[in-house]
Amino acid sequence: MVSVLIGILIVSQLICFYFILLLNTKLSKFKDLEIRQDKLIREMDDAISVYLLEMREENDRLIKELSNVKQTEKVTVAKQNDAMIETASTLMQNNSNTEDFVMSSKPVVPKNIVKNAYSQHKSMNSASTLDNNDSQKEPREKNDLLTFEQQVLKLYKQGKSIDEIAKITQKGKTEVELFIKFHA
Image 1 (cartoon, rainbow, N blue to C red):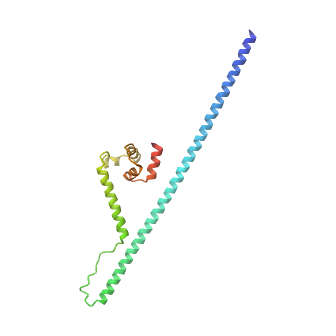
Image 2: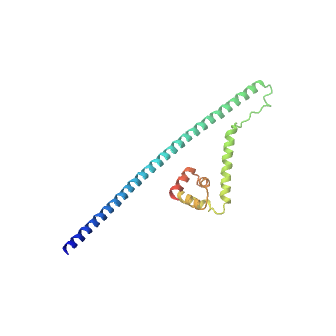
């Protein structure tokens, strides 16, 4: 009887050691998984921060180039105006009847500047027309009260494309796409 009891105790101790070993291996697997997830999160944060930094640098470069273009266009317009004034003054000196000659006071604006301004004005008008024609969209004042995140999620749930959402919210397509990927 005592030997049977000792045998049962030894077997129960072996079973307990087996379960302890099994629990220990499961615990170590969870720790490894947690470490891998932390590493992935850090890598994603680093990748997103690098991407946002590149976007900021690109935006700064674009703003700098646009300001340089505006300055050169102003200089070009000023030079053209000066050239017109000089030409007019030489014509007036050469012309015997100066009363017939009337100098125009309108500044000359290059065609490409006018074309860009016209296309921007046209696209803004077409966007506002689209906003007014869309019956599912709420009034503009109500959308202005929503945060950017709420607007994006609402428009995405309505089935709008990323391009449409970017135009409506006046944000970049990449920014809208990233937000949808992380929150939808």
